[in-house]
Image 1: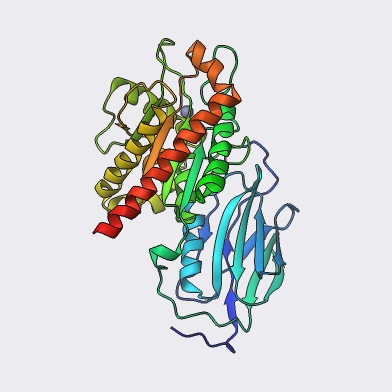
Image 2: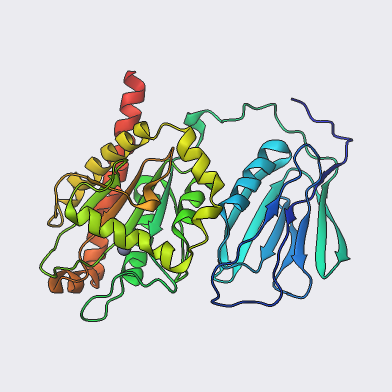
Length: 381
Ligand SMILES: [Zn+2]
């Protein structure tokens, strides 16, 4: 595949938005996204009345930034970006993230200077992105060789925003504690092990469960780790646990209880989301998840053997449950319950920076040990 440099290429991303006024703290909106397949034109359409929605460019490298007044973005939008990247070789990189709790930001890195053509129509601002004279792009295979891609871990601090997670008797919030641990883990991975790590949320913002999985795919993560500190009906229950996905429902009573309470979050706050989930539905059917579960269990073992050195474990082996955030078809994924916030001693521990550091360090060591083992196996086979 070669690129005709003289050919003017047009990219218009279609984001039909049925928004009228900003809806702060409203239920996440559904954003219909259409991608005109077979055509070189895709359209970006933003509600003209909402000044938070905007499209602008940046240089070094050339980028088009699209801000959308959206609290939560659907997987279809993530999927559209994947399609765009595959279709247009001059789209070097795409990214989607929560820029602020109410703004979703898309960044398209392009290989030439982009120009924006704006038209206004029926209360919508339409923007056509054109990249003329795109820089030469190497004739590369679709997937880069595994050795050149830096390892990336998607760290998922559980809950956030209007979903507080479990709350301890002394008023400690799970969503805050797990964010501290997640940020610590990110720093340790990057500084001590040279492993790149990205968080699904940087602050106290609500993100539906399936978005967390989509983010991991969008970043082409090698591992996904969701961090929690849940409550249990019995406040004597204590200790850390590591979970991988179970294809047949939860193994233990506790796994059943926890997966029910975690998964019910989306039912409470985002009940129309699952029906709008073609991306995951399709991939879940298409791909063999057994292999991923087996690798998730292996990853869980590396984590558990490090966590047990610093904290009592409810079960020394990875358990299996039907957590929605673990349903990634390709990325080994685990959920770590660092402790039980409903247990008096553990609630106190969870609030202590020294304990947060200890848990983060154990998880970083477990992740590093998993990667080292994977590398060794690849060399041997
Ligand atoms: Zn939780």
